[in-house]
Image 1: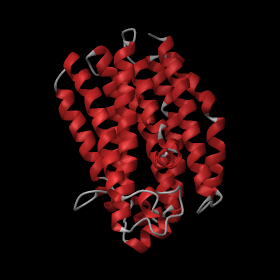
Image 2: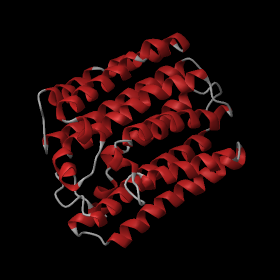
Image 3: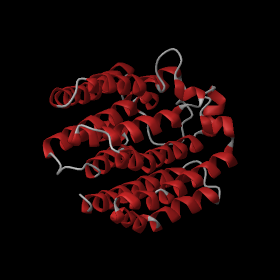
Image 4: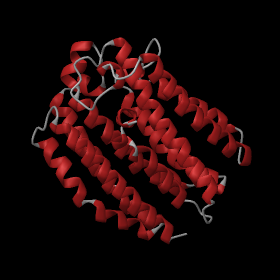
Length: 285
């Protein structure tokens, strides 16, 4: 179980949790707990599913053979490709079942949105032309783990998408992108050798570090705008000190295994930021 938990990459789970709690707090009505929990199941299921799917696809392609980051199940030989693929499908299935219930009580258009999310999760490194190998990973992460997940969590509460929900989705998406940038920055040497043309590989080391800093700062600078809609959103500024360590390490040139701690610190900042923003948005309901 410990091996499978490691393969699910818990450090990336804030990217699934934060949009749901922020989107739920951005709703105009008092939260429906059942809908919020099911939205969380959808998001975490997708995150775990995409982690297993990436493990499987990268493993069978051989792009994880020289990996520096956390252990991968297929590349390490700890699990067969088929079992990891089935685990990905199982996680996607749990998300789909939860999403079907939410669609049944809101709108069936959510089935289309959920199907696109699962397709995007699989095609990041899977399929004949994975978009993660073409430098489009950050864009899709911003869309699905930012805009769709946050605004979608608001929608299942209010059954409408509000300006506040879309506004809150921007910093949430940016912090999810920061996680991916950290991951891809660490893997530049290996990805370059295997032909995995991520955005980090295309940009190079120094521009990627600059992009990480810009994304982290933009997430903080979004708060004054959100405070125009709900003043207590500024509460999330209290998370700023937790961004200092990972930004400093990236600027100083942390590489290889050092970036694993940056990934953890980025996820910690994202989680604290999200919790504080959730509280701030909740005060204004």
